[in-house]
Length: 68
Image 1 (spheres, rainbow, N blue to C red):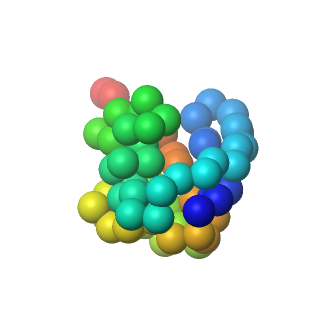
Image 2 (cartoon, one colour):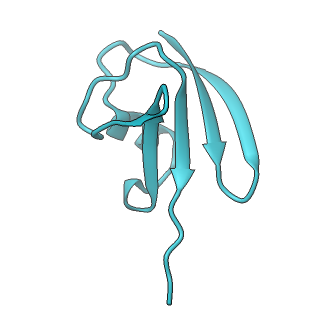
Image 3 (cartoon, rainbow, N blue to C red):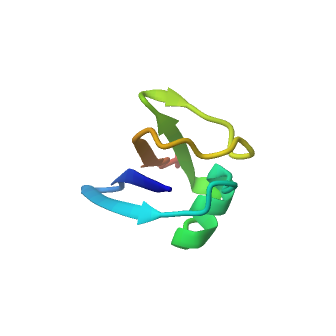
């Protein structure tokens, strides 16, 4: 299955990936080398749980910055 991914992390990077149909969002992040503890994943503007299966909708990955 092909999905469009937009990564928002100090800029915008867009890519299209071909992934297995049984991938979860956690699997997707792992395949991209992204630590799931530092990002939020959105599908059509709504956050999704990482254990949910990826759908062919557009995905946005937002890096979360914290500090004090």
